[in-house]
Amino acid sequence: MKIVIGSDHGGLALKNNVIALLQELGHDGEDVGCFENDSVDYPQFADLVCEKVAKGHADRGILICGTGIGMSMAANRHDNIRAALCSEQYTARMSREHNDANVLCMGERVTGPGIADEIVRTWLGTSFCGGRHLRRIELFN
Image 1 (spheres, one colour):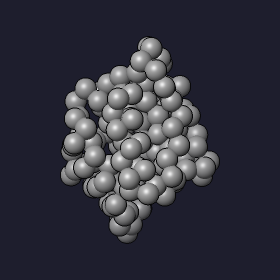
Image 2 (cartoon, helix red, strand yellow; image 1 turned 90 degrees about the vertical axis):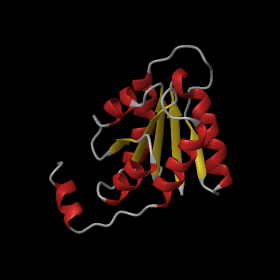
Image 3 (cartoon, one colour; image 1 turned 120 degrees about the vertical axis):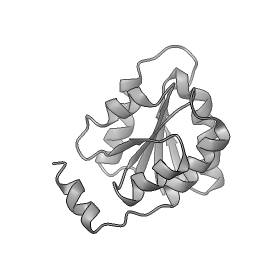
Image 4 (cartoon, helix red, strand yellow; image 1 turned 135 degrees about the horizontal axis):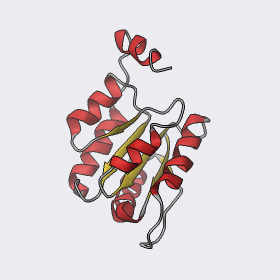
């Protein structure tokens, strides 16, 4: 699966951990930044990731900032993006099964690397179940 990933400075270390996990799992990961600890504006990285997902250049996206809140708010402004802020496996699974989330958001300051790995594994391994949930998603537009 092609996964595009981005972060701001507050999510850089966790992003690097997630990139290593994506490689371990055999996914094609594209890192769009940031690449240094200098302060940056998270909406710019949300835009880069969401544009690639919305245009079909990536299957899914992952965004990480300090809390995940800013990234999820910025991501959900985009058409055809369903970004889910997840801090444990249950919401990661439900975001895929019921909401067909195509962007995962996490916060480095609230989610440790071990939990983040489990969230990513669950989120990538869960399929959308469709049915009544598809009807509800279609009401978003």
